[in-house]
Length: 435
Image (cartoon, rainbow, N blue to C red; front, side, top):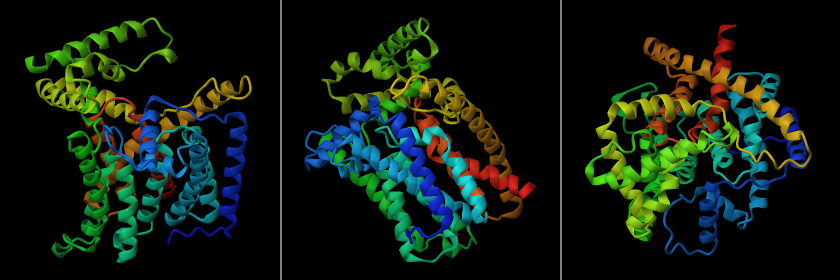
């Protein structure tokens, strides 16, 4: 079922071009990029290699650290794995496009076009979850494009359940996707008797992943959460109205607001590319807040979560403004993560920056068209009651955009990245239908 036919001419071309481009990029930029988020993944990977989770503070879920563990904790080998995984991912994009009734030649050209976007290749060189997430998201959409909703195959159901379970281990946020997929299996040719059906098994592994790791965190930290970052992430939504809280949490709000105002002043003196994202204020405020929770990060995060809930309730309009015009809007922004000064040759970074600027315009265009197609596909469904591939894709992506905006502010573009190729395919499917 996961077999890749290497005898296929188009797939050989795809693999060859993918390898050549990645080799060229490695000559120009073989740099393992470490971001602040990377440290948490590397630390948990080290704990997993030692088979010792004692005193682990629960900051990260284990999906990506397990992947790093397969590279024996080596960041260089992890990047090599991600590069190879990127090539396999491109093959599944090709197979997905074939499932969407494009001919082989068109599917090859479209896949090469989709693979040409630079952010894909630079994510492969970073110790972050995005490349691994993209692979499993691509597997999921490949099976969805192959009429999975209508299939009656227990082995395929178990496989989809495993894919969804791994996605939840990588990023617990994705725990809602299995329920969306199951909902569509029920809605497809709806009958009352289909509300409970054999595809319930696809919920099993994601639930085990989510609650199993939450229990591990309960044992280690005392808090039953998928990640102890949850409260801190939720509090990021309050950055622009941090001080407008209840007396009970004024100790958080006042410190939060002080660091925000300090950061705004510092940013006003810096060039745009050197400025710190205001959304990251709470991370700076941690050092002053931690002593007030006996230097326990899980306890501080719980307090921040409670603070966020009461502060949001007290400022619903400001929260709504934050969600729609900042968090949700940021989801659609094209973003690239790289170390701009780590190219092997001078001026190459400027060439890549110029290419990225052009690609940014193209990505914005595709995303704008995709946004316009969201109501189109929902209205089309209401008229025809037909569940199409496009409707399933659009629903998952739209729900992702809304839910991520509700729970966090900061790095929202990273939630969008694994779905960008699907957005482009939805647009291309519409263009094909019209012309």
